[in-house]
Amino acid sequence: MTRCEADTHDSQLSEAGRLIVPRRGDRHGPLSPLLLVLTIVTGLVDAFSYLCLGRVLVANMTGNIVFGGFALGGAPGFTWWALLLSAGAVMIGAWIGGNLIARHSHRGRLLSVASAIESAVLAGAWLASLIAPQPYVGVHLAVLIAILGVALGLQNATARSLQVPDLATSVLTLTIIGIAADTAARVGSRWGRRSVPVLTMFLGGAAGAALVVSGLGPLDLALSACLAAAVAAAAATTFRSTGAWTEWEPPAPPAALHLRYRGRLH
Image (tube, rainbow, N blue to C red):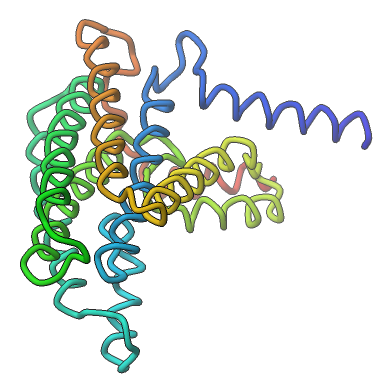
């Protein structure tokens, strides 16, 4: 490894470290590590929903759309109404998130309130999973899908509005593609930073699957609720903060993004 390559490697690792433990004055304040915790929640909940609720995802809607195509094509093991219910529940959760976004101009307060609601909804799903007989079928299956879909729809809407790069808490396709494409285009792959949410969701999914396979599916949901509550509590400590990170960042116009990208190429 050359000196230049070693410096680049160290820089990428440092960037990954700053995502987990932000520096004082970071442009996104403490949001990055809190959204990483919610990324773990995504892995945990999707592990439960896919393994316990009939191959349904309640956070990653792209998968559900493909699964719906599988069901239409006659593939066994997929239930079309459950996939539709999941999508509808996520949209309801996103609608709730949109209302919270409209009411909170402080990013820390928004994350705290949204995570507190998500935690309560996940706790409700945990109770429902304890009451309902396993395997979950019929109305019990529908109730669990609906509750979890609302919770993750709220989370995804909130993460989307917070505009922290590479931390949507659920969608990782573009993150993975960006590592390879930006490396080839020589515009900065940021593989260190981008690898963190990928690994985080992987670990969340692995932990969730381990719990489900061990017969501890409800514990998966209880852990998810606790993690969301921890995020709500941590974000609540920022209520009085007036740092620049608390304010919304207006999205850059498409033309400005295009010029910025061209500038990097040249």
